[in-house]
Length: 452
Image (tube, rainbow, N blue to C red; front, side, top):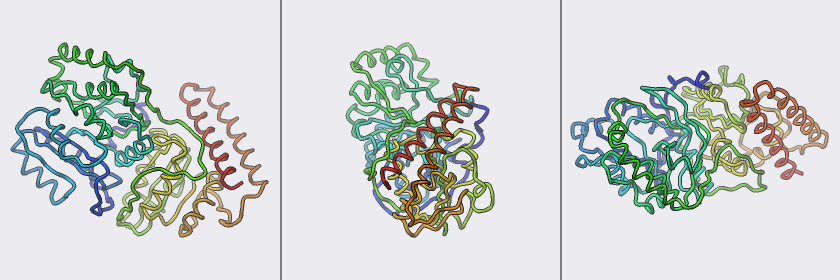
């Protein structure tokens, strides 16, 4: 798996052209303790500024590093979304709790001053938390980089969490539950406050959402705070043991991808926002993720264009290598299977078209085009006809019975081929085969239910 992933394509290496904030209240509060972390902070800063939605606030607590005050203010400039609080050195847990006092959003994302967020992290986390109002927090797979390189994506285990911390600190946490457990533990200046936080959330019955994409980059260093904590490991583990004993009931996480039926009228609570994008033309690619279409690979659009904004939404799980390849050619990539149930996909597509003011939709898959284009063109008649891989049928003409039968036959053939090919490497391919085939059948069921 590591061979397919490029660790050189890190977030925050350059500034991206993102829509400007409109003064709306923040959807998410990012909190960061800062102490002698200037070496890598500029990249962290750019990874936050490059987020696909600008409706966030960032509270940075300068934990006694007075020499960095002027440099921080110079870097931040006049961005009113970012606040810098100066305090005497009290440790990262205390600094995060200080930041919490200034947070105003319903969701909180702790982020250390040298770690990185993928551009769509906040938007995906916000949607998945809105879709699951009973969940306490949501997190993604993580990329270890720096002193060591690895991909980290274990399934959540409540029993294993009592003896081993498989989660990173960065996650999207509901502020109400964070306040309910008293914030971050300050018993020790350098402790396992992130591990203790997850155990306390579990003890109160809150479960997490595991988004199945690599949205967080964890910088590994030989001189990080964890080095100081490990010096008192025996004492800290006794505290962990005591916290774990208080978890009486099993905690089961929501693990993506998972599939549910399409509803007739999909809705999802959330804020309807419109991004002030600088590009004149905005193209949306709807794809199953099997390949990179010629429209992207050619000259029609590319991520750095001054005139064209491009986004890609995927209805099947993306491989690591293909996702990074898409990210080279388009501005935004969303694998819907990695953070939302199928019943919310149409709501996300609707919100995406409205917020980006999409002017054209390109379908990569002919069958998905036949199923989704009637709904899209009925809801958004302004959309131009895309130059996808197949010919778009008449928007007003209902689907004939022979076309429906053709689609069913196509899916049955595709399913048989996928299962046959999966026998060569069962562990990797069976998962993709079942999920892709399941998705296609769900699309068919949704279309037949909606359009008859």
